[in-house]
Image (cartoon, rainbow, N blue to C red; front, side, top):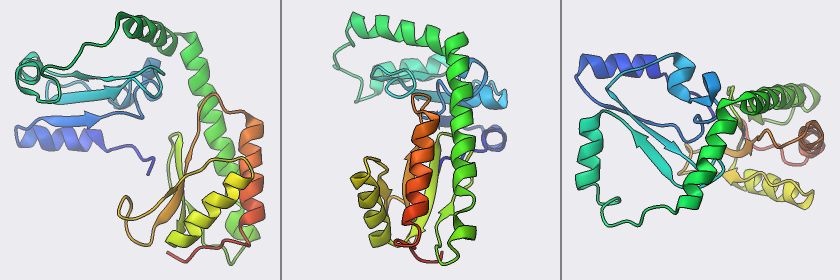
Length: 221
């Protein structure tokens, strides 16, 4: 959905019940928070209750993932995680590439890219805000999201697939996501923006969706 988990409330719940809190920050690491440190930094949170997982194949642009947690948790994972035991260590070249990625993420270049991404998100939301006004019979709905993932709710499975196919013929790859991945009746296009996109890319997508709105109206939620 592109929304950000209510981590302060979840941490309060974990504190109340003396529990660990697992945070899968695949899309937050490198993008959210000061210096791109992720969702915990976004909320200014720090707690030994967190088991923080981040992927290295998205913002970092390499591969693999990491887990950061209390030393007792890490030791338990090292000794008992079946997905870790007997696995081959990543090559040194990947570690070197990751070190470069982390320097970029934490530095001025990373800050510039995050600012650029925020501009693209705002441009997309502004460009699609007038869809319903211009096409009153179109029931698409842009979900509330402040992140790079911008779901356009279409409703009907077939309509979402047809819309994705129509965009692909225009050179735009926007995958359709259908139940059971999302709730029934909420099939959608998953628009995923990157700092590597340009303003022209966003304008092109908005123009294509405006043109297609009368042809693939979807269903009312």
